[in-house]
Image (tube, rainbow, N blue to C red; front, side, top):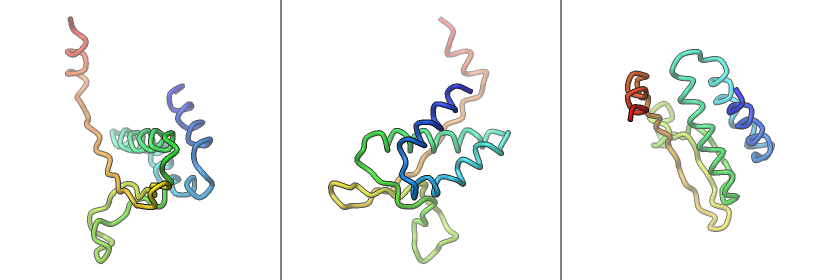
Length: 109
């Protein structure tokens, strides 16, 4: 729980008001999914938090269609503005879910 609390605190401090509104769906998803999808939302928020810590990018949009003409098609997680270069960067987060039995094996000497 301490990790999630720290993540929320850092997001509140690091995001501008407009950006906070954009991440509400991810926060909602993280707080309401009690299955493995929880980790997808947490992963997205963790990556966004680290990107924002760089001070280089501004979050412009989320769930951006890859093809603008097909808004119901494949989407990317974040559209970011590189504030120094005035260019956009698109980010898709892929979370890898490792089964618990493999995690315990990795801890073995």
